[in-house]
Picture 1 (cartoon, one colour):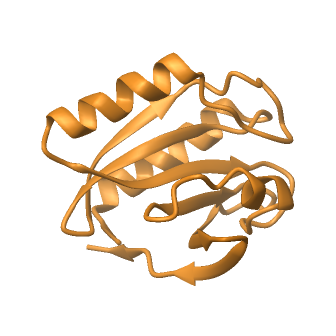
Picture 2: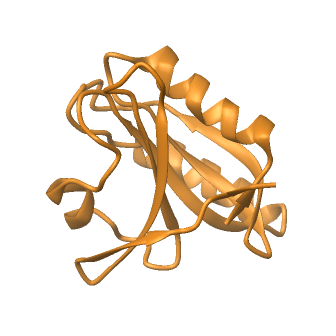
Picture 3: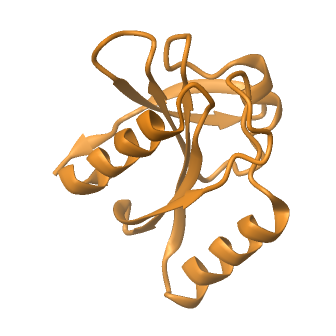
Length: 130
């Protein structure tokens, strides 16, 4: 997925602003290029997991669909660990066509990585700043 620096920075800003809890949100895309970031509320309000409220998730997904865009990615942060899908992340990866973007805040500089998660299998995906 290609993403503009401004959208990339918006995701990092969201992660930092929600710390010490995990942040979460969705990224609308067209032709594998990020178009818009949708910040969501972490209903779990937890530093260890995230949960997008069902009503909010539905609203975001309908707005993406009504705009003629695709759900390109789901993002969240890891505030204490590296940006790699946890077993919980893998178990709750219900969108096999979406990229999963994780912002790691364990170090001074945030680290952002992307993955595909299909049938419990995790593979690193390219996240290209463009």
